[in-house]
Amino acid sequence: MIDFRHITFLHLCKIKNYTKTAKELHLTQPTVTQHIQYLEELYGTKLFEYTGKALNLTEKGRQLYEYTLKMVADSKKIREIIMSNEKIQSITFGATLTIGEFIMPSILSRIMQERKDLHFNMLVENTQTLLEKLQNGEISFALLEGFFDKSRYSYQTFRKEEFIGVCSAESEFKGGEFQLEDLLKSKLILRERGSGTREILEHILYEKNLSIESFENVVEIGSINSIKKLVARNQGITFMYKVAAEKELARGSLYQIDIADFQYTREFNFVYLKNSIFEDRYLEWFNLLKTASPFS
Picture 1 (cartoon, rainbow, N blue to C red):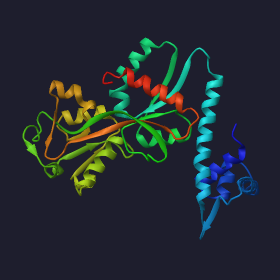
Picture 2: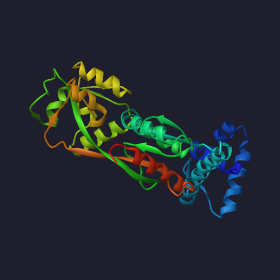
Picture 3: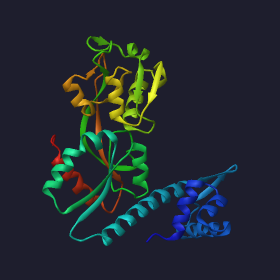
């Protein structure tokens, strides 16, 4: 069980205001102050400092914040393990939309057939949401297609996928080779902010001195299937991982745009908290998922 004063510390790190932290935790402000003073005496260092009127973590405070997040996450996992059915191994993990919808079904189907002793919950969210859930201990690991701070997490490369431009059978971009700049006059249909697919596209455009705003018209939709249907109806173009459009490409309802100097392959990563006491358990799941993958 995590000491309640560490919980106060985490809330103050997030809110950065003693009065608002006290209100959120239904405590008095002096009590919040006492909790922080106790931790500062315990660790022999200042945890917060004021820069003008802004409350900020000290370097040691940032270190304690990272370690406390791991303690909270591991504490939740311990509780789950102790309370679970000993005969059934249970775990909750996350996957981004492309991975969760177009890669994991075949892998999980194989695991479910071969391992009756396993029980799992898979949450499908965008990259940023999954990283938040990972930090909060709501999931054990995440399969991510987007960028993340590799200095803060442990990770294993799960697989690599090609990132492509996609258009309809009626599009002017079907057939022939085009420059990326030629596509800017088109309506771009893409995922919402925080999604890995969008982050990859933003990074590629940045490398070419372009941005999402370089397109004349942009539509944001949080569903890959909806995006594919709109593109197939020639309502715009999009960019996505090839694995997400394999069926449509095969039957000719979508076409890959031939873009000059646009050959990109990106990693899909298996990500978990660094220095977790459950690292060995997570790596067992990584090997299980990797082995069950048709591309392993």
